[in-house]
Each structure stands twice: as C-alpha cells, then as structure tokens.
Length: 242
Picture (cartoon, rainbow, N blue to C red):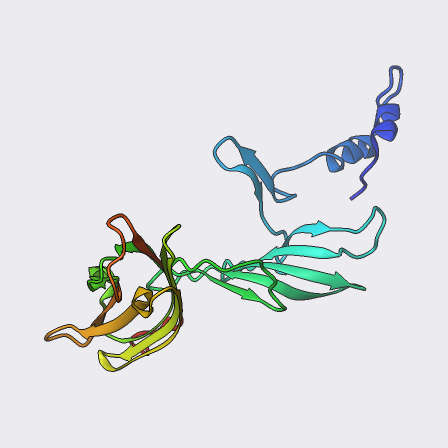
C-alpha cells in the first residue's frame, strides 16, 4: 500500500498529465476508507474506531514524529470488550489501565484494573451518599434494594457540625455482617466539644430475614437544621459467595 503526500498526488494529476493506474492506486491508498481503516463517523456516534487486527489497537500515541514505537497504546479486546491502556517501551507494551466490560455481570458493575500506584488528593465514596438529621435519634441508612441477604462489608465516613457553636464530629468505620450474623463495626471517631457530640453507628437485625439495617445518629441532639452527612463504599462484591 503506497501512501503519497499531497504534493506528489497533485503532480500525478496536473493539467496535461496522463495519470497511470499506479497514480490512481496511490490516490486511493492515500485517502481514508471507513471500512479498511476502521474509522467511521456520524452525528450520532461522533468518531468511531474499530481494531483492524486481533491485537486490538485502536489508537497509538508517539512521543515525537518518526518514533518507531508508540509510547502509549489504546486497545479494545474483540472477545471481551475490555478497554486497555498500555505503556510502550522499545516495542514492548505493558497494561497500565484496564476497564472491564463485564457483560456477564448480573449486577452490571464495571471494574477498573490499575497496574501501578494511584495518587489522588481525596476519596469520595459513592455506593451510598445521603443525610440524616442530627437529632439524637437512630436513622436507617440502607434502602430496601440494599437490604439483600448475604455477606456485606462497608466503608463509612460521616460528619456533622454546627458552625460557631463548637459542636463538630467525624466518624470513620468499617461495618460487616454475614447473612445478618456476627455483626461487627470498627469505628474511629473524633469530636469537638462535649462527648455527646459524637456520631454513633449500629447494626439492627431485620426480623425473619438473613440481613440487617445500618443505622446512624448523634449521641446528643444538634440544632434543628443540622444534618449528618455520610458516604459509603462497598468493600466486598460477592454477597452470595457464588
């Protein structure tokens, strides 16, 4: 496949020239073919890319023009649909970031695999986020869809406070149970002011079911508009141990 630059192609088709079959082949090979080259585009999908080989490369990024090997490769697995970013060095590439397609996952939970260290300025848990009144009463955290029977482990962070009144509290905890049995919560708590400003957490067994509810409260009542804000992440993704 001979690809020519624009100036060469223009010379083939200048006025008075008689283009040869090779000139037409060069012209065709120098233009984009959506089927042969794996490119497509439309207002609906934007730019579409598809791998041309079983290796699955759809984008290669080079440090500079003329480099023999790419510094980064973006690949898609034709069999699984996984998207992978690989770092290249001297023609050999290693996976750095893989996003699993997980078509067979019943919960439709995507997975991300990172082969390296993760650096970030903070973490926000998003399996469950919400608020509960800081009124000294127990409040449910889990909704009906989250009250499944099985083995569960949660990472919880919660906080509340009344500005300019010297009442603040933070809670970090790990809460686990197995089908509602052996309910355990490991807590790290801090508060400013009275000990009653602290945040409390507990499990409550659900009657006639092999599961339990997670509840939160403040020991003392805060002001009427004060809320406990909480974020929860799942630490275990196979409740039924399939």
